[in-house]
Length: 230
Image (cartoon, rainbow, N blue to C red):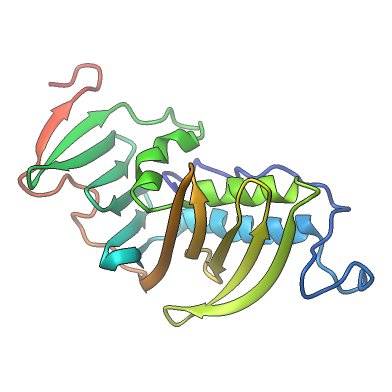
């Protein structure tokens, strides 16, 4: 998951240490400027560490809509809830649910092979519905750090009562701002994802998870497309 599994490790690659941050610090103030690699790796490491946490996070989307990310461990499970659907990844299945006519229809597919990284494409539907996932944010940060033309500014803020470090990125292919809490949870994001404007902000964080968080919604129709499924 995105956090889909603790098997999903750092998607960020090693970045060029000589690249430096612009913004509040100047190039001349090199003694105090944080290197791009330091900044990106710190935020990416926070997001990565969060893959080993148990938590529930609610997000506010534009227009009063809501989304959420839920994770639990032993075994690793994650659920991404967004307007009109949800994606759940467990050791047993990848479950995609879509609301049609007021009723959820869910399809069970084979989960990622243990020890492999789920691809970012797994989260495409969540991204399109407004819930940008941590693996996607890690990839965007890495791409920005590798772009010598990118301008990156650092700041700090508070989101849902939790401290968060933020980066504002200006790039030729699109600007974005991302904030990550001290725990490693995505605090907020504003920018284009897969060509679609995306904006979300953390509204609630809890270290508890409901027992049925990874089950198909009550009353949902379920089709099992796993080998041997019915």
